[in-house]
Length: 308
Image (tube, rainbow, N blue to C red; front, side, top):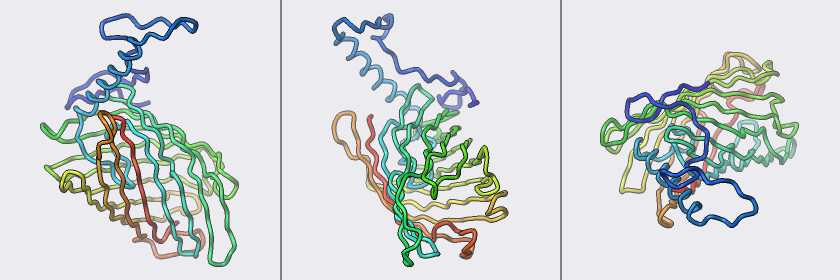
């Protein structure tokens, strides 16, 4: 489903490979599985050494930008990410969303990444006291990513990536779409010295209940500038077009300003990043039914623990 093009600078290569990194020392046969024998300390050491080399190769062949607050980066990452959002809608409801579909990103080859995400947890209140709820939303549990082409800052400073995300309808009654959803997406980015642009274009395709959720075209653009080694101020535009469903024919546009700080070293192979921002709905004008835009304004927070 994903194109089989590797991420070396502007060169074609191997296709999707979801095997774990090398399981034995370089140049040797893989270690035999022996559930009853002693643990091979040299083999374990070689495994982590080869994994570290894989991460280093993957990052060395792409730019070294920071991931934006909202726009999903096309860069391969090895990290644990946790986000939180405080959303305020025009109808008077306020919702706190924990995690929001972020989770564990794993680089599994020189050009492939998978994400294993947690389900978002929502807590909603309102001025009227009606509609309060707490529970999990639908679960975007898996993203399979193929980096197509990339180049580090020293040569071209760009990246193009494709991925497929899968969401399961596991949320509570008030928060579920009732449909499995697939989201094929293309991400891209280009840098010029300390400035970079990152973006995505994707389609949300529900397998049922399209009369409510509808098909959506989503585009995100983030503009970043790198200052003083660890500061990444940014501006983002997040646009959604509903081709059908309850919001059929409507557009929804958000503007986000924010600051990401990092990466701060926590050891030889661990880095920490955090950041925050403020998002406002730029269009359309508020309408109650169907509620559009879904949020009037929001406070955003992100934290990332990188294992490389």
